[in-house]
Image 1 (cartoon, rainbow, N blue to C red):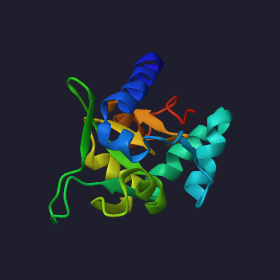
Image 2: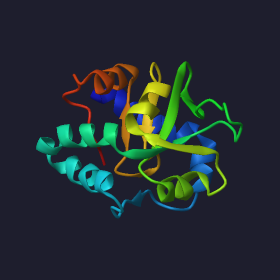
Image 3: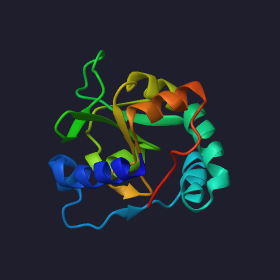
Image 4: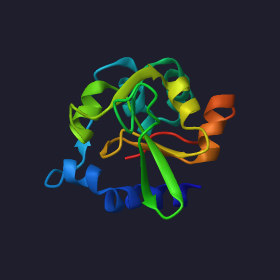
Length: 156
């Protein structure tokens, strides 16, 4: 699973021109934590013992889900980093999404659990183009939602 996650992460940077264009001449931006979720997200990169805390906090915290449009019933925005792979984008705060997609990008604020429910069956990228970011495969998303996740956590 880790190999696929790393490959998908690399593919996102190469195959998502809108994301890449947003930071064309900028290195990946390191997160300066602005809320409790981001604090534990950053700490969990190096501390495996905090990954379960991160998973719980992600489900309970308010996050920002990128949407396809501003329509009231808009589906989540998806990118296709490789053929047959569809990934939704979740950000740990409005500022994070503004940095990557711009302040006018369609979005909705909801709990992490609600965002993951809307993205069930897809890959999910948390804080795309930022450090740290997290790529979840569909089975990881299901494990987060049912409480059985044990390994998926933030990466550099």
